[in-house]
Length: 329
Ligand SMILES: Nc1ncnc2c1ncn2[C@@H]1O[C@H](COP(=O)(O)OP(=O)(O)OP(=O)(O)O)[C@@H](O)[C@H]1O
Image (cartoon, rainbow, N blue to C red; front, side, top):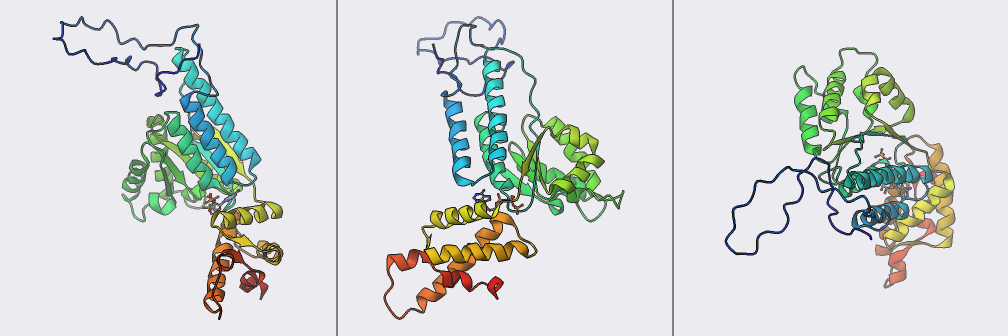
């Protein structure tokens, strides 16, 4: 038989549910509860891992991740693996099978605009659904939010950021800036020490994700072995290939109820070739910015038209809208 009850996250050691309140008749003196033994499932109970309420919600989030992000096959695979591990842990706990509490701190390495923040948001949802986090919030910070300029300023700043993230995810973007090899007395080290303590103490209610370029993150972990040992999950985000960036552009355009006509598609393809060679190219973020500027040029073109406009006009981004970019200059 498939058990369908009690899908709230069940932690061994937590008191068993008190059950329904009384029927209204005067309460007879209740015997002392014997022990607060958790109500584990019986050995012959079954759990439908693929379809119970929690698994269904997790699968919905994974499906959303699949649909909203083009490519990233290995990232999606890693997220799926972590979710599966936690679903199985949860099932084991319900049978009273002891499982060590997982450490869920992570590093997301990769260039800008490769989807790290978006995946962090979905990860937070999954961890919340599975009961590992109290909420699904991601509090994103950078060095400046954690490290002060003067002595005594760093600890309160770091603690405040941790307090804001409590119960959810603390996402530290460009985390390697916390470590400055050239300056032993840099206050970043103080922030790292506090993070380390809180990552251990708050294991059940805070997940820290360190994000940034892989090589520089490697330096941070190499210089801080204590940090490295507390971050067991490493997920790598590759730069997108040209065709993936085209697909990302099409997806973004479609989501906003726009279309590229065929010449616009060709123009955007050329734009990408030019833009990728220039400095500060930021993968999908650059694509999003380019589309926003294209929309500005479309708007300028439409308001200048000396004829009434149609729905198709409002939806269509043309080659001219794209070729107005300075990158074609
Ligand atoms: N694979 C993808 N498919 C579709 N959209 C994507 C993809 N990757 C990123 N995006 C979009 O690009 C934008 C930037 O992504 P995101 O902020 O997640 O990246 P990031 O790696 O955290 O970047 P940064 O470090 O620059 O903040 C977002 O609008 C996101 O939705």
